[in-house]
Length: 341
Image (cartoon, rainbow, N blue to C red):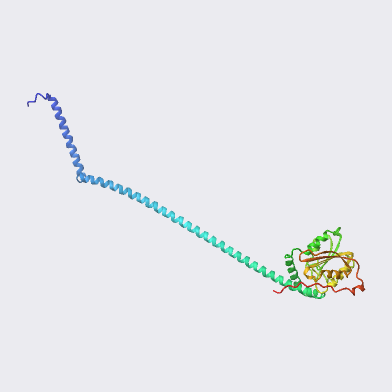
């Protein structure tokens, strides 16, 4: 074989080049066989391989999507369960709060009902007590002096009802007369040495407040152990044994003259008679003072400034002789009558 001299290629170079080409050809054949085997293994054409790859990728994505979906579903269910539990807790809490609120309302209603019933009962009892007091009070103003002790002796509860009603009445007054009398006695020099007779004493508050004094407390019925039961017109005190005689809202019955005579008898010469009465009972207070003076008393103090009550102080100037007793006037005051309702 003749070579073109212009190429100037040696034989050895040609052989080397031929070997390279042969080697490349073998490599190409091997690659083709590998590709062919691969295609046979995958049972299809290169198109099938691509589809397979796509299928694998799609399956992976679907698996991932399913896992994520399951997680989301589980999360949603957990959230729903938590919401349900929270809702149930709130519902239970709401029910408990409602029950508590209802219970409180029921308690308040019951308390109000009891309070209302109690208040109504107290009002009714108060009115009943006041009615009893008014009835007995009116009777006392009109009874004979000797009749009253007999009535209360046969029915002590009536006297207690009277004093219970009287106590309620004193709470409505601007001032309690016995308090002013006690105050006036305490202002006297050496008042602790004074012997006192309290006619119609009630609960004997004067004796309680002036415990250092010798105090005789008289009334129709003994409310406590400080009281001596007797007729105020006929006590067992010695004549001329008392420094102060007190008639505080006690000139009742039709025997007022007998009470004033007894006060004169037990008082020392120069002793003091203190009278406190409801102002409405006096038709003419000056006329009353004039008549009391005829029992050998002299007016030393008159206080008509107090709302509702008059206060009169007399000094004993002499005993009442037998002859004078026959000429004594009949003392009277208006009874305290209440309007019918």
